[in-house]
Length: 148
Length: 148
Length: 148
Image 1 (cartoon, each protein chain N blue to C red):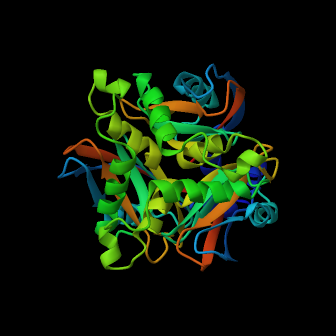
Image 2: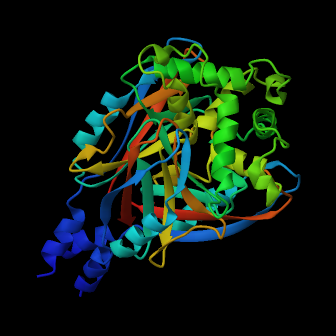
């Protein structure tokens, strides 16, 4: 009698998966929407949340328009004007990439996207960007899908 | 014997709802705390997470003080100084609103707020802002409440 | 027969806990990774999400490298250059700390981190920062761990 309730509590599958992306420029933006979308479909969660997170501190995840790749270029240009590469940054005494950590902190390492009817709930013009500000590098992206 | 456990697993209700907001200025900030709060109460989730997300890429969601509407104005002023409207942005060749995409990318399209004792867990001076940088427009906001 | 399924649905414990941090400078960055990590271990959740949120609107939570404390200093320096303390901010007519609200809005009040094998899923060089831009103050941080 109680069992169908339990079964429904367990109906959604879940998933934590990691994929890698190779960036090409020193500062680069790459549309990863399709990679995330296919992992969410595979997770089989009807309703829930999908977190997309990069595990690196000179990289960032952003949800914005990806249909025009120039938006990624413009974001990099704007951040480079606001955060100069050379500025007596204190972290440059150790690693010479302070500007990249600052830009990544401003954009943030992850985004959360609702899952509805088994699919990412994104607006018509929203996609998922990976930014890297100290490349080219191979970067790991974690996709964590949770039912609920 | 196991059934009460199952029932408790199912106790929390869940919800994904969308509402619309009309912005008034070209760049605008609107306090949407009450709309979100009433949806969370209706969801009937005792404990969990509430995601608030705009589905547009020239808009953003921010949690900060909304008691003084001037904070929204000041955030718009600060971003306009850091990201000029005209700057040979590459996306302007297509759509003439690159600055709005950049500002929205910096603030981000969503915020996550814990739900505790059936209510949004916000500090005394925290509220929820919708920003739009390329309006006036009617903008959709998704509220996704998840028990757990 | 269905009971083991129910039991597994309930296996993960959950937690919402708050701790306080005293900041030392007017603008300060403090590594709170260990406090969050020990709360997550105590929560006993094998797989899920951990939200870390400050309840104040002149403070922010950031995931970036904490191994070099200078990264926190550099982020404060960069934001101070982009958002001047004095700028005819309209909120300063009321409270004289508009710059702090703007910086906190840019970084955001919370971060979400996956939990995997009972531990925070962070990259080798990722840690958790609390920033305060209008201190010194005692600031509350909420850690909400959700299984799934």
